[in-house]
Amino acid sequence: MIKKPSIGSVVLALIPFCGMCFSVPLWDRVAPRVLGLPFNMFWLLAWLALTPALMGIAYRIERRR
Figure 1 (cartoon, rainbow, N blue to C red):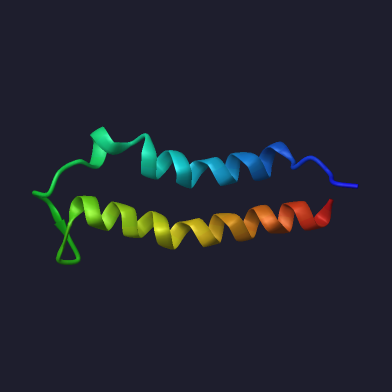
Figure 2: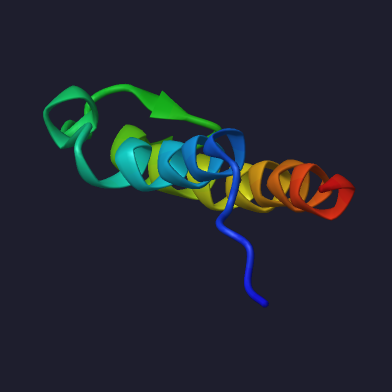
């Protein structure tokens, strides 16, 4: 039988999605450079690096259940 995911793991899964998709007005600029990258590229790469960490935490939450 398939269990429904916990609210905590669903929220952790939605954070990167919202951070990349719905925050465009916040990071849609090139002017500040971070580590030599335009800010918009740095923002997306940062979320690509943070997503596995958040998914790992969600996995651990679900594994305990």
